[in-house]
Amino acid sequence: MSTIMVNGIEVPEPMREAPKKEEILWRVDIDNFNGVDQIVWFASEWQRWMLKNGLCHLTESAARQHFDALIAPSRADAQKPNPVESHQVKEPEWIKWNGGACPIPFETVCEVKFRNGETYKKQARDFSWIHGYNREWEIIAYRACITWQKPVQREPSGYAYIYKGGTFRFVPKELEVPITDLVQRVPYWLGEPPPYS
Image (cartoon, rainbow, N blue to C red; front, side, top):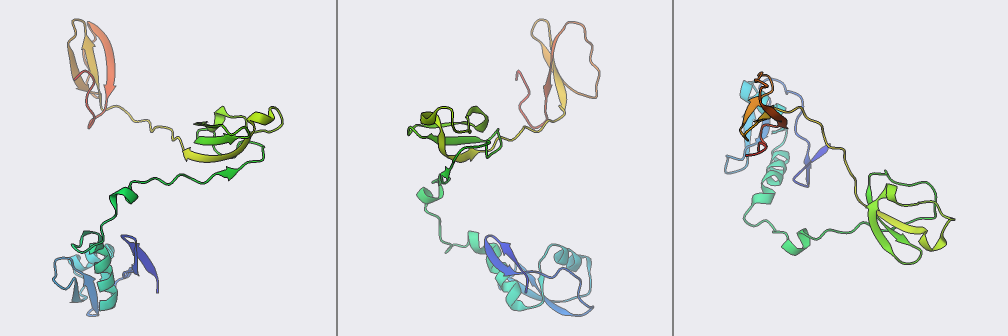
């Protein structure tokens, strides 16, 4: 039997294909006191929606396990995580290094340990990974900390047009504005605070 993970709990996989007409099945129902509900399949719009969203099972037991997993995090008797433990970040393990080409992407922020005992955190490109030049400063171990990701380029929603005298106005990028007395045109994005506000 195939399974899926729901809130970190393994449960039987819900039905993925429509059953035969008038077949009895079980659906996950968080509005029902029991958490599950028996239904007869007639392929109604509502039943097709439940099937598409993975809420139908062939057995009551499978539907109940799915329901229990869905509500597990919000139950009154759910075990609450220890706030101290949940906020502790485990440092990555040190990886032994014997020299050679840089083993991680150049943009990765990493911590390196040198033969002389010193440790430093920088982007991987800032270190000499090859051995044989200065024994004291050879990297003997490293651990990756953060991988840098190139920011996503977005088209601005409009521009703030700043005029002589300090006045400005926000204009969607589709509209033309008079350019007289224009000092600067600054892009802005909807959903973010506009510049100079």
